[in-house]
Length: 92
Image 1 (tube, rainbow, N blue to C red):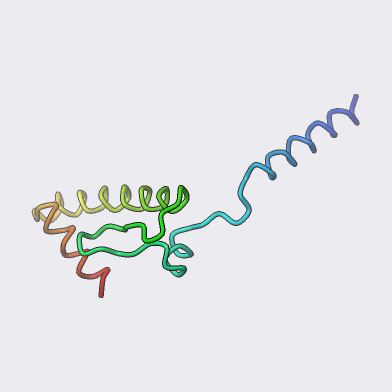
Image 2: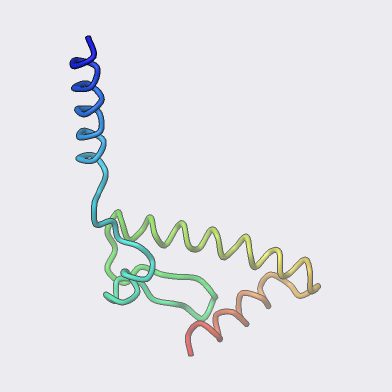
């Protein structure tokens, strides 16, 4: 009984590892490889689109928009003003 439950647990771990990408692309890697670029609007764009790159762009941009809204609310500046100011900083 004990041996079979250990084998099942090991098999489950192995299957999980095989289904998880070991070298998943992240924002910094994508940027360094020229797969994404900053825009004057304060958001990221895909230079060489793929499913993985598009997912990174979508995730980063969603986080940025949330932060830009927070800054807008805190400072009284419009969302567009915050986006443009951040875009100017990010594209330098």
